[in-house]
Image (cartoon, rainbow, N blue to C red; front, side):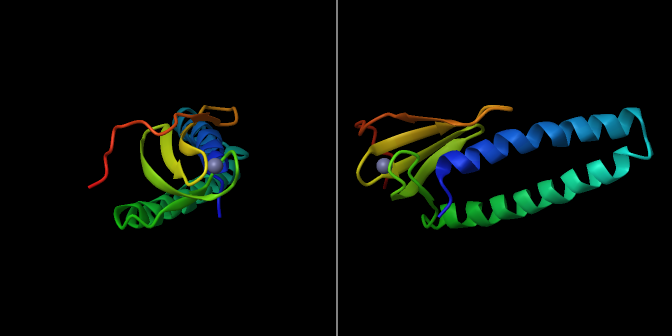
Length: 119
Ligand SMILES: [Zn+2]
């Protein structure tokens, strides 16, 4: 079980090097020490995208679960957009995990608000 916070931290850390790599390749094409670095990040990024795609399918089937950042309980993913991921922990209630660039993600309890988005 991946902790929601761990996942969001990985997302925040991986995007920046990828875009820097893309920018560096554009500015300095074929720089000898740049190629293996960029290749490494590209492979890593593609693997992460593939994983993200699988998670997207699971999410659509309402079968996507992450570990709660507070108690590590199995929590269903309610939704998320961009840098924010919302999980429903059976013991803590709703937890919003926000992804930040170059830093660890933050987790915040939002409690059980009366906004029922479920069918
Ligand atoms: Zn919890």
